[in-house]
Image (cartoon, rainbow, N blue to C red):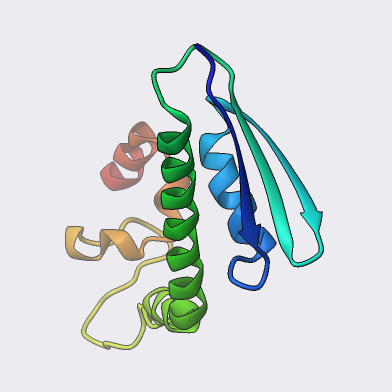
Length: 135
């Protein structure tokens, strides 16, 4: 039996983005129609396949996904700049030349400890490396 339900969601509580994110999660198993009416979104859910879900269970499932996406959205807004800063610091704070005791040989392969600093050799094959090493 195919399950069908209609849900009325306040646009003052849930953004359109959050509504679409929750709908996307269920889109593999349900047909979803969303319409805006005044301060509400009217959401119609129909199962694509036979389902054992009751109408109330389908509504609960949709509301759960809606609340999860609402929380994710709020966390993203609150911590987005911090995450960007952490990633930026992680990517840009590595300076291979900051420690003078490190050797960096751009003409050949550096010793094993400095292998990750070898910008020239990353495209060379193992055979090319062996030939360079033998010279």
